[in-house]
Length: 207
Image 1 (cartoon, helix red, strand yellow):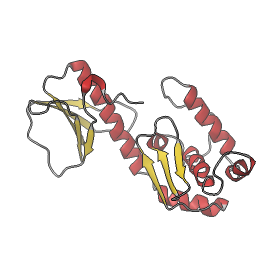
Image 2 (cartoon, rainbow, N blue to C red; image 1 turned 30 degrees about the vertical axis):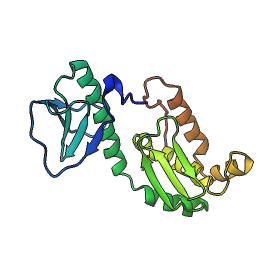
Image 3 (cartoon, rainbow, N blue to C red; image 1 turned 60 degrees about the vertical axis):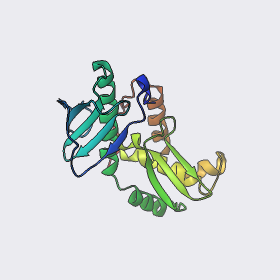
Image 4 (cartoon, rainbow, N blue to C red; image 1 turned 135 degrees about the horizontal axis):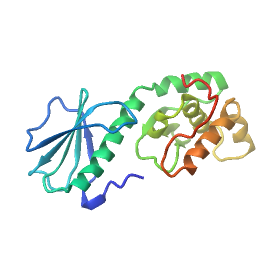
């Protein structure tokens, strides 16, 4: 889980404004590898005391930090905020609603009232609220093969018919032909300490 409260800094914010605020000092950096590419500008503001803010416009992400923040703290927040921007960009490229419609039609599943990405789900891949039909899936899944995402969606959709886990629930999930392989993929992710994708030969198409 991201350490969003390191060094007493308040919860960071992500914005997409029409224009950037005036600057005190700016450092231009290349975004770390591992996702969509953009230029990172770090703004040190004397007016900012305890907040970190990320503004996204075009291919530039501007991260505003307090002027007295150390270089180590700056590096931490650049990593945190750029990773959040990469997750958002990856998630925005996937039409979740369409994937759910297709999965429900293909495997005779109940349709949810809503399906959304969740940036704050770090300890689980998805969640379902049967009482209102809402499904949320971790935005980390946007970086995985699409058949893994589809498995998690099927898993959560199954909870709309069966609340708990058991034979009836498993029978619904196992309608998805890649369920067992996807479970193995996610177990491998959980066992890694660095969050890297496991090496799995002959994976199905990620389309």
